[in-house]
Length: 333
Image (cartoon, rainbow, N blue to C red; front, side, top):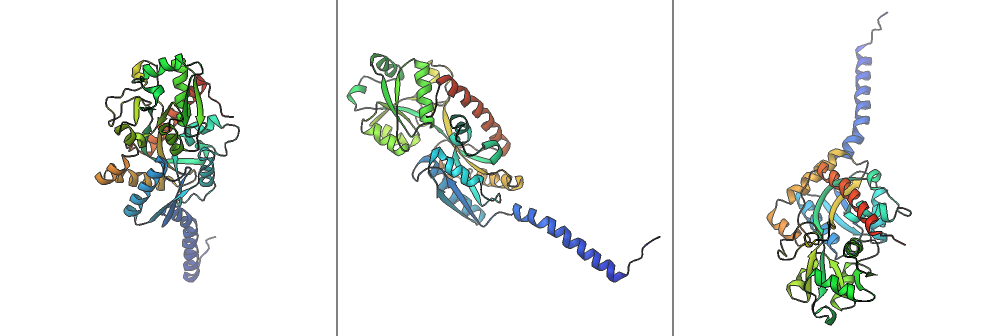
């Protein structure tokens, strides 16, 4: 038997159907829309390279999208506090994790027993901003370092020093710690770790001759240009444009040596992929602006990538760092 509905009932049924469809679609559309205000959470104190990159991209994204992007510094536990905050935030694009690579590729290994997040399960990579290779430096006016003009000279001095040389770092388990311990392993020398609370403190220590050596980021360039610090080698697998005459550790014959950090953007895992792709496109478009490129390049070489390319890079570096940590026998108490 065929049920015949009156025109009035048919209209009511159609209206209810449209309302039901809108009720389902509305949350998706709301999630896909860019928020008017977004918070960029940085796991380090103001003034460091990650903070600098975050503030530069916040300004640029704000201008491009006509939205507000603010930087929120949450230092502590090698960026774990900031990562946990973003992990637990609503996945609507309003909270973005601006992180160095250590929080993504290294923390899961070094802090396996205490880490409060899982990079694979809790975050979606958006875009890298800059690479941050490290520069091995000594204080040119330090009497102990007067004869040290090259990495070979430093290695020979370390072997002649009964208790070895010491080095300052930005903290236990950081990339400087990794680079120096790998160098000690490859050169068969004793290098004593002296951790400081942050990059600025470690740089102050080498300037004050409180430590014999350190690895530092591009922020150390003014001191190198002034002749206060002497650059001996670069930690990445390619020379820096700013220091074309300074060789890499690898090319000096100490084996595969590519220890470099980068700064990138991440959002909570459930954030819609469409929003992730749009934000990636905005970041890469910003990198084409000559004025912005020049300002960001002070932090490090720019790294425009698609979301997929960034995901692949993270996967490979995580595996490579795991091998470095095992080779150098690095542990965090």
